[in-house]
Length: 371
Image 1 (tube, rainbow, N blue to C red):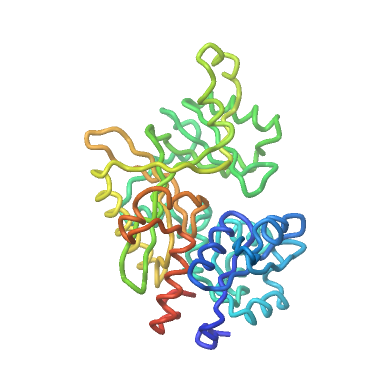
Image 2 (spheres, one colour; image 1 turned 90 degrees about the vertical axis):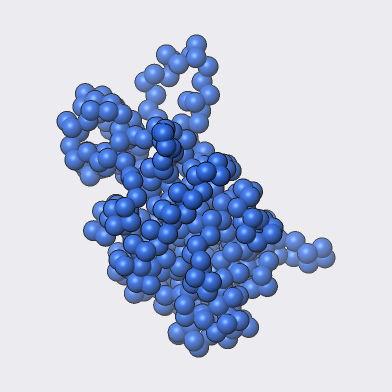
């Protein structure tokens, strides 16, 4: 069923029950749209119980749920038909990519997902570093500075971050730091012995310069209905066990000298920019939009993030070490001032997505915001 066959009065925003599903559900509810969360068995209570909508008093944000045995069952015909009957527009989050990609190729995901997707479904694969037209290719096309990459460990001549697949948690990466070929060998072998890393994952790992400076995620939104780029908000990550190591008292640093740095996502906190950096941030965002449009027409639709480090100057400069091509994982972007500067009030990314759907619905342009 094409989006043109949908009943505009019954549109439903749907997503995988993880990552940013509550953000999407709350945003839909704020704009008068229905919502539906696809959950997996054992993970349904957050959505079906604790945040379910109720009346008298009005509370909660999740209207309905579909419980699957596994998230990857989403592409089964019966589930696709259910979503189509609900007039669903699917908002992909990182969990959508991760869980489906464990079972399907990106070609199969793009073809098998018959439900209209908010955004450009062909760009989701660009987050994967082993895809030929990946985020690095887009960053180069956009002339955005990113960390220097090393092809072999014996080339290491500065502090680097090694990004490899985690041996136990397939959707996480086993990050570690090294500043010499010997340290690379020592740390990687220890992680292999601890079961965090495999020889195969190490062979396929990315070795990147470690840019020194504060990290900030530039959470953008490109609106096809307004033909404008917005900065929804800025944040930084809380990560295990990196944040714990940062708080170790100096007297105890020797005690954790051999502890491998872990950088698993634990949450986010708001982080504002100096106003002098905003123009540089928008310039990067505009170049990235142009590059994505050239590489994967129609390009960016809706939210994306350039995850950066601000390195010392003069002048200070962004170095982009990662790209997100869908809704960000942080619900806290609304608590930086940038959406209020634009809209006169705090607007979450989930609400901004719902606003775009309403703008497109009311102007007869739904085909411009889905693929």
